[in-house]
Image 1 (cartoon, each protein chain N blue to C red):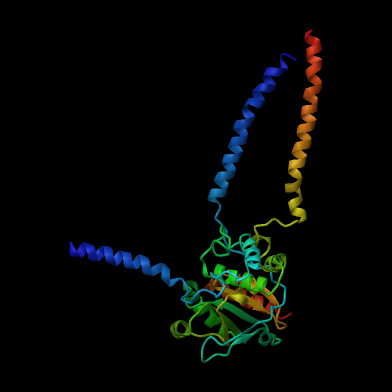
Image 2 (tube, each protein chain N blue to C red):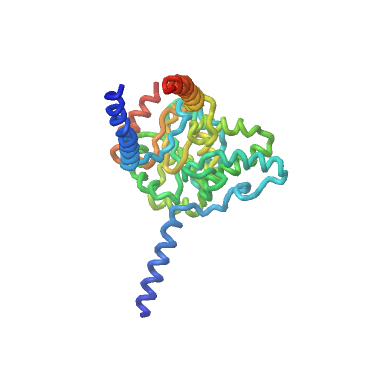
Length: 145
Length: 183
């Protein structure tokens, strides 16, 4: 029994220690988990951070992620917003370094145009098809009489 | 008209199944395709951003962007002592150093004691090591992890990015990229 407990303890401690090895030991950046004092600026920073991709954990935003790198990016975003920088300028700065992938907000670029045009094209097609239907309706009714 | 209608309906009947089949094929293709989670830097071909990092260890100076414009291509290695693949690539960095390549290091979120232990264990091929406690330089050059290695030309322009550890078979390629950066 003692041995079993020891084995379980050993397994648990290995499980707990191994992932910790691949993490840094530094405390998080000053503004990683601290909000800005000015609520207006903090709201601005929050809105931006929610639409920036965490590059370590790629389906999360940097606002959602506890990865140290996401913390450092939050620190950068908050300190730059506090320094009066425009959120979209910070986004553009990051896109310059990581490509559009880093932003969850779609950018207005020619490659996006088909996506924006699709609903209009589908509506137009539907209108054309439906127009045919409405025309045929009375014609059929006439024939039936 | 009466003969045509059933046949057309027959073909149309199979259309949803065909669409579903195509969708299924797309899903299976997506599942089996190896996921690419690397994010390449979009900053290749651009000059290094301005930075001035303090020294990360006692026996190597810190690193500033101005010091990287030496007229000769060099490597910028983004690493950390807590990063396992960084230990794996240490012999390759040492081999590159013996080829006369100058390598500067940026230590990401590292403690001095850990870094000293890491360099004592796996070797220290670096000319300078700057400490980047806030990942500022890392984000500044579009690097998204450790280890990553950048070829910087003599004017301080980023010419190439190698994502992940440098393996033994990558060394000739890195040397070729350094030569390319000379022109």
